[in-house]
Length: 239
Image 1 (cartoon, rainbow, N blue to C red):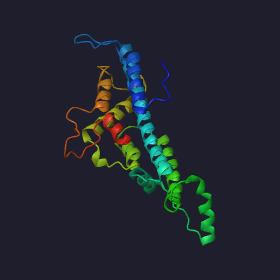
Image 2 (cartoon, rainbow, N blue to C red; image 1 turned 135 degrees about the horizontal axis):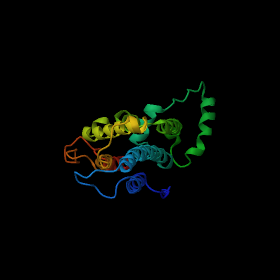
Image 3 (cartoon, helix red, strand yellow; image 1 turned 180 degrees about the vertical axis):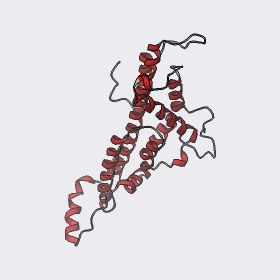
């Protein structure tokens, strides 16, 4: 398998990774009954499921870290605290201790000067210190993430200011099912897992996660759902 380009955007990296996994682990073509797949093909399909889950998990963590980094960069370069920055601070920010006198406050304030050479320091410098702590804590949480199910999505997205009410339940259900399928194969031996009859089922679910399941919410006027696929999540986090 070809090594991924480290400069690729997270979603493109995911799509390229999935394409390579399909080429390596899935049969060249789908067979129609009564024809069946070989044991080797079905075993390879299990490998596709486990590795595709890893690609998906890696994408989620990477795009979320990127969103947090952009919020920090915006505060550093323009002094603008976006919703993401404020949300991160509310979840992870460590309050600065109150100085006991003005001289001590001035000493601490001076140490923060290099962070903001061009705009009003009185508001942004203390916020920058808090946001740096918050982003560090959030990145650590991303590194500890271990899944793509609903609870994992909420822990990754809510600190970025994403409302869970903007996530289409049909899409979240696909993520949950994919996580359950992966867990049933990744934590048990080959003889202890349910037999796969169609090696393309996991790939089809992955495409529904990427593009949105049939009947999922579309960005129509008045719709409260803005996240109904990985493509829509990527656009949401890029905004």
